[in-house]
Length: 438
Image (cartoon, rainbow, N blue to C red):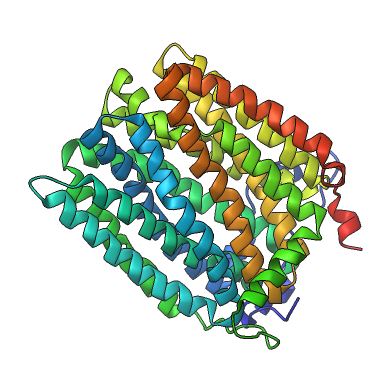
């Protein structure tokens, strides 16, 4: 790995690792195990700016994340149509993620973030304009969903590849947990606020709030130092993309993270059914709660993630957490009331966050910086393909067999699929980061 950003060498004498020693029976030591490590935010200025700017921006994006399927269901009355939004996003996301990864390895990652944030803001303005029409067009939602997926594919590799340049290696677990915490707060507040805005202020105002949040992220990015590519970087090309694919294919621990997550999300992702579920449980306000509930579980897992630095069997941790996600989805589908439905989603979200922390740690600790962008593109394909296809699958099954059957069967198949994947990937199941560091 190349030398970290200058910010990552500030206050070396104050730095501690993500897992400080625990005095036997010490209360402070136990508290460290059960609380999130905020050290990277204190010590790394650029990581702090990125954390704040992307936190606000992601909050706005999660508002739109609720508004688009709500408007699509409102215009069509079909869960299948909502699920097909995911299909519209899939192809452009796949192409853009590979391209975005190559760009992140060849150019200033901060500058790429700025350009894509500006493009996101422009896309949000188009959604506002469509929503203000006397007769909003459903096809616009599909086109804009595809465009937003394209921009996400171009941006996310740069965002993911920034973190290893802003912190030290032994801070990566803590930095990953903080990034997850940032996303989790957005996934709780964004959908909750989005549901309220849709119900009270209307869809156009909801999209407008998202547009305004990009101003904060652009200012934060402007204040950060440049993050030039590694000295050995070459111009992006098909050959460079294929190099990243070959590297990923040669690493069983990386392939395991991709495959297990895709399997779990394909079978156990019911979010396309949330508008239909909400229509029976209370309407738009309830919709926001359904979208926010998994993030509540993620938040609980994140703020108690101090123990994660002492887990070394990361492959097994990913598999177990992915299976628990499926159990939570089964509970959601069988729940007879809103409270139990939300509880099932909270369990699922917490498990998904644990899986994400360990997947991210495997990626950041094992991938060299000159490949970081391209592998981040592959990672994005892995963690985006499953949910997008899962929404299509759940919508299709619901149209044939009903919403409850779709949710419960998906959760059961998720658990079974993860078990099969673990058996088929013994090297991933046995992966130990202590051996990898030697």
